[in-house]
Image: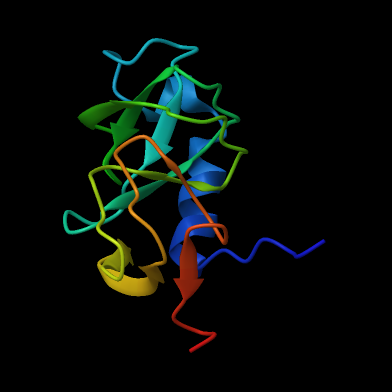
Length: 124
């Protein structure tokens, strides 16, 4: 099993987001499925709780505002990524405004983004 490695920014945000009802805008339902998008150029967001196939996921910014909603095409484990838009094969996967990898296949909005469809920039 591989360890989940979070950046310092993500650690800070996840610690703050543990009490979701106090952190996130009141317009988000208390038990809403949510994911965090930390940069406006990101094409993926990190889910902060396990997401079920077909569930609507509210995407929140680092300021706790809803910026988008997508429907999960797959079940997605906590701390994994969800695609915010279509990412073509061989296109960059962007998180925190930085390229973190390359899509190895077409990824559609709502898809689970992980090692099965992305090759890490670190591995290249």
